Length: 353
Ligand SMILES: Nc1nc2c(ncn2[C@@H]2O[C@H](COP(=O)(O)OP(=O)(O)OP(=O)(O)O)[C@@H](O)[C@H]2O)c(=O)[nH]1
Ligand SMILES: [Mg+2]
View 1: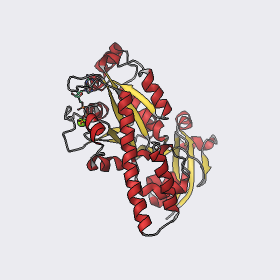
View 2: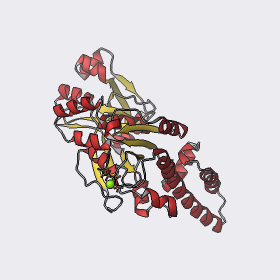
View 3: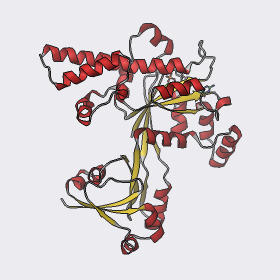
């Protein structure tokens, strides 16, 4: 899973990036740095540790979330000129599975304007909508020139009307085949979007202001809030000190853990597990994925030569202590291609190529 940290200059993207990845990229660039920051976090999963105790594998592999953090447009510029988003930034955004809009809710001497999260949430969503609209108009005029009036054009016309009415594409109901037709466009307003409210230290443990919560709800967006600055400082301490500081600030759970949960929920991800003497591993998949497709996550050969999936619930494997004992106890199920994989299934795929 690849997540893009986006938002206006100085909203704290790089600070949040450092908090989440434990890296120390330079903050305070104020829109001036060209290079993207890239980092990866491992998703903590106690089930992998549980499996490792049984199998003593050479390797433990956790699910990963990778982050891209690119300098953002300046909020005032975007309001005045409407020149649209920088093409390089757009390119970065196209490549990610989900966008996290970092919204400034702290005051900072660097800015003449006070924080106005509601304005910024609206303005950024408008930028995404505008970028998609320009792209769609270009494509439609090309199709017109070619005297093409296929279903693609009809579909694009429909999306164009939605965008013109200021609805992001994520709010448009689309059938599976339509999504397939659209995949190549990589529209920005179609990507899952999470709002991350970056609040001042004093509000580190408080709920988001009600007007922000209401706006998020009306836009059907998930919202988490954290204090980037405070959490970044804390994330660089050792575990014991971290716990102490979090407690002092009234924060129940570190930002990284809350973030991971929100990102999984946003993308509707679950993990299935594989275990053996070589490796115990968590594999993130979308909820509702069939055993056949899940096999393909591991290797296309396993998908192609799929025979069956042998499934044990993680809890059963731990309780009975081995695959053999699970089999004796009737806890090992043999499932076919269409089985819907569940979170915490430990799967052994049988295949033949
Ligand atoms: N007071 C306060 N300052 C913060 C907080 N988070 C970030 N900052 C400061 O805001 C400034 C901008 O932070 P960055 O993380 O560089 O912002 P950015 O979104 O990466 O900015 P660009 O890369 O320019 O788009 C820096 O001076 C940070 O120290 C916060 O929670 N509270
Ligand atoms: Mg930055």
